[in-house]
Image (tube, rainbow, N blue to C red; front, side, top):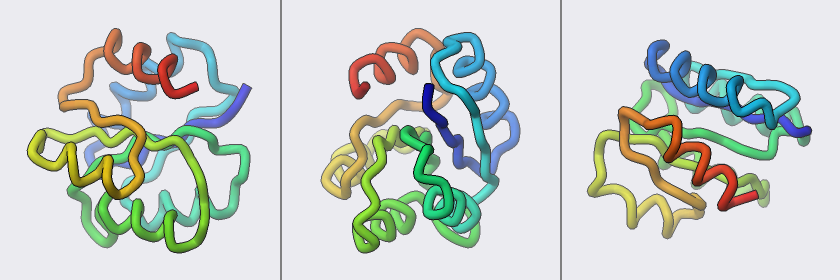
Length: 118
């Protein structure tokens, strides 16, 4: 089993995602970060993190900056972007995200995407 990290400045969104992930019971550990800067550092320091659930709009470092930093550093992780801004879907996919889910996320959709990118 691998690790997953939820990076979102909204505690309610992090809690919801973590609840869905816990129920799926496919990850050894579910981590969280309240902004992109903290999340990026956690990803850099822990090679066992395989999946990143990433919000776009956050303080300090946004999701676009996280995607760019991962690419610049040559760090390859499967990234699912979570956002209310559907107009950013094409941009984040071009930047290296594997998938895009609209908020509020639905459990069934999240599990489908996770199975798809495995």
